[in-house]
Image 1 (cartoon, rainbow, N blue to C red):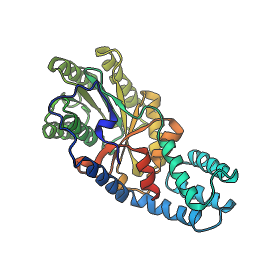
Image 2 (tube, one colour):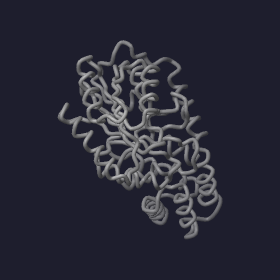
Image 3 (cartoon, helix red, strand yellow):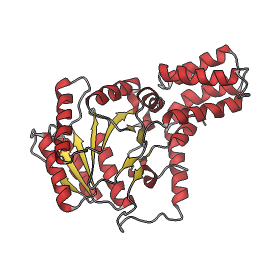
Image 4 (cartoon, rainbow, N blue to C red):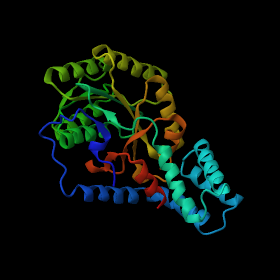
Length: 332
């Protein structure tokens, strides 16, 4: 079954009484999400799964098999480096006789892809009070929407008190959008004037969270291109301001990546991680792409775990990333 929100977060166990207990319908909820994930990854699976079916299951395994498998994985944006590693290991195991038969090879490939996706610390530690989460990413990736949905789930699923900091002061629409989500989630929001100092907004958000006894602060930052050096430098400044409020904050930095951008998403992750330590990836818009393998490329090449995925517009379409079910949804 799919990972749930309680599986994603590390807490001290003292969640609010407002947090609902897991009901009898929870297993069905998890199975339902897997069905949606599999459906929404259909474009990637059609591109990848059909080729793997033809390559591993419907014919003899020979040199052409490995070439076709490499092509299929690269087309799904798993990335050349990661693909070479996976196919090389699979071929070595097959040649050595440890695995035989097309169906077994397919199962082993799914295991390897899942192992590849499980990199680093794939949970989010909420034991600090307040825990500060900084959200970064380029415009159009769904960053602000992700923040709103995350705040809703933290409040509704875990019963935690959340404060949002609207530090994207360059785009008025971003503040309005986040304010709408704050109202929907029932959480506080700190805003600043358009064009004001983003660091000051982040500072005030943390100050308010401490005063009100909030559990989590989520700071939205201006969407910026990874090629804009001045804006990237400002992102580092916001992080420094946050750390002056709480020494080891932000405790979690999440980078939102649009899955439809494919290998450009890998480049974004690389360059953002050079400016601020990126703890995890939120991979959005998986429902509209045949490039779902980018999750594996980021994990395999950068060692940054994917922690959340978005497969649609609904609240329940933002979910914790589960490596095993992701691999199954890609291939099955």
